[in-house]
Image (cartoon, rainbow, N blue to C red; front, side, top):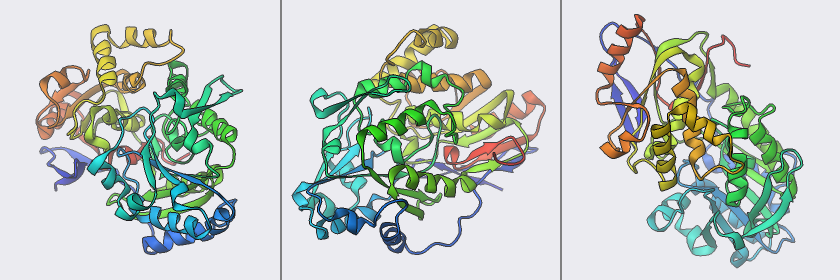
Length: 430
């Protein structure tokens, strides 16, 4: 029976070779939900550890709403207009409301892409919509350094100086910060490059607690929480979607508490106890928009490592329609290929500030240490494939058959939704 893997803007039909014993790893079904407008309205009216949005808007003179960039399928079209309308009704002039795209160190989203990201022409016509640029020094306010690990904290002044500050995002497993959304939309989302490059340096990335689904003693999470406290009063709208991009959960309120409420909800649907490991694991990079670059594909390689037997084969399908990623990332990948994994890692440990985007290459070291990594893609050129550091394949079924033969093990774990599902080798989730 064929399996539909998330791939690009559609699905990739996976036909397993004869003799393979598939073990499909998917989320359990989400419970039935109210229509999206009702979910959003209820979240605004009954927030977590905060007053309702309508009351928060009263007496404010300006507002800044953070939204994730194009790499995250956040349902902005569902909540931006009702959020902004509530602000305007509360007395905030439309001209004093900014929707700020939290790009981190990613490229800006402009033109038709920005319109698709926002998803509502009314928003673009009514308020200011702009991109964050981490490299622009003058765009940031220096808030000092964190007490825990000395991270310099510089945040986009449009957010810091707004009277009402709201972060919005998608809560899903994140391969280094535990879970996305909430505090992460601020840092790295609208942080200065020095802030981002500090807590993406090797002393953070090599910490064993900097991993998916873990918030306990996670150095990135702890620094992000302190950064939120340094910014001051911040609220958040947190969303969860299913594999068809339908809204299944929304929480609004104080940024830390409302984010934890969303994490509590989503854990039961993303952390999947499997009870064993596999010699062959087949996964995806979660489809569009996450699988549009090889840079983002690394997340799909890291997430299933808990169920990969030492020396096993991890096969990932990722469209990579936009190519390898940034020039910075390409340079890091070239250094990895030229130096080898061990020397590359040693070079990172000497730096206080990571080079832009090289932390993704550093995260790729984890699957490379664990086993054999194979990539199926239709979007990378030969030059791109040469700097991935992994083995390209053109036939999924043949690669799976070869892995089964090499390991003498017919069992194959298949994860159609990629990094949105975190399989655990233990019989029960922690």
